[in-house]
Image (tube, rainbow, N blue to C red; front, side):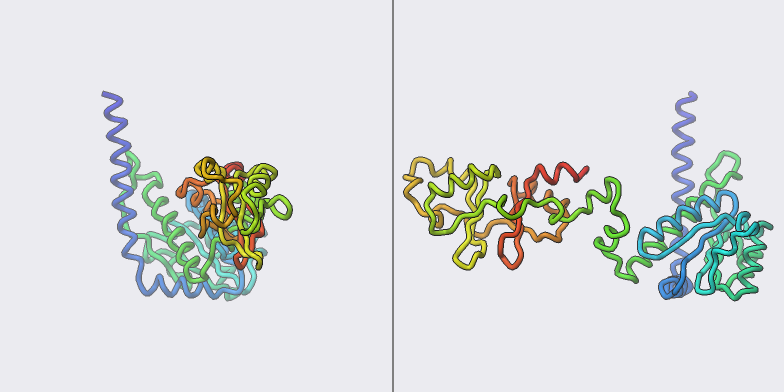
Length: 319
């Protein structure tokens, strides 16, 4: 009986919070558009603050915003009233989160911003709260039941506020045309940073690249494949452009056809799969996996500048 009650409770929490989250579509209007436009044009930081559970949510939103192209900082409202108001500069925008909108700890921040003409945005579920009445712009969290058993602990309301933060951050990404390259520049560490590595960081270059001229003999091609140990050789023409590829699989398939007497261009496969050095290692891995190949030659203007093996990618791409 207890197990059934736990499962029912868990499902009820999901149901209640989903109902609340769906209500957020109501805030996507012209007011929301104006907030995004204002945030996208700020010349300073976007500073988040709050008290209680709202402070925890504010800290997470600020972190997401900083990692997606908009400089942001979090400071607890109580700490602000004890000297940390100094982090706010005249070009900043301060976003204040409070479910009730009437927490007395917010008054110090609100009064400071008013006095110094700092632009403010309030986020609250109470339309006529002190917070909403005191800020330049606002987002009203739609009314929704809390998911806890007694209907008091911040559950649905905090989830909704967190998603409002995601909506704002992702919208700003679109407005600013924030790219994978931009994300990589500010996120070099960890497994995520590794998955954003470019092919140029891991490819083999110079004399390590297996190359053969199209008019060379297959005997020389086999020697080059053996020396470089990739199981592949890149076929180039007189202009040093890539025109084909020979793999150890091609050798096995041609072994009984006077292979050693043939020219490379008569055995090679034309139009090989290639990749550029500024592409992600994850893309190289997906291409090799989908085409069932173990190597890719890296090109620039169809000239070979490197080779990457599937094992090179597997070392750094975690998923």
